Amino acid sequence: MFAKKKKYSFVSLILTAMFSIFLLVPYASAYVYYDGGYPSATYKLDFGYSRYNSTWTNRISAAVSSWNSTSTPVWITNDGTSSNKVYAANYADSWYGLYTPSTNWLGSVTSFNIKLNSRTLNADASNWDHFVESTTVHEIGHSLSLDHNNNTSIMNSGRDRNTMYKPQTDDINGVNAYY
Ligand SMILES: [Zn+2]
Image 1 (cartoon, rainbow, N blue to C red):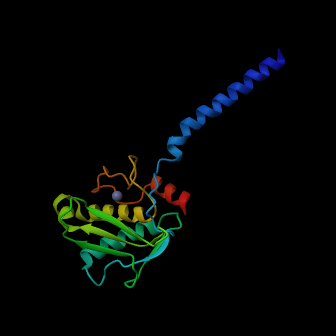
Image 2: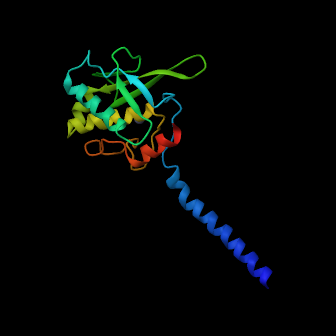
Image 3: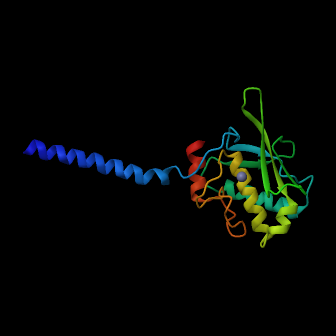
């Protein structure tokens, strides 16, 4: 009787553990990874001070600052000579922002650029500063190996860009698990 009872307890313990894992997994891996990210979370970026006025560079700088102030290995500094660059222009495409990596013959990411579409941003933003910052924080998220998801995340394409413009807990967890 004792042995049998012990066996049932063991089985129920295993079942409880399995159930707990099923419950925890969706939360633990909410973020999604993208394989075109930069190999390091510490890098230099040409913010575009030589190309754009403060209307743009203040937002780019604010987006970088909000990543730099997270408890992650992220540390991005401005360097006009960096091959990692941010561009802002009128693009005919429908996107607000676009992240494009460059790779070497081994497929490793060596540099990237981020494009901000002034045409769509100007057309759709209610709060322009927040909307542009949200877009820039999102594109920097791609450089940090984060892909789109459907969570409370700066990487959620359905987020309200007027009100969500900082890296969220899910984004921070994703970067910390990667770098
Ligand atoms: Zn994206």
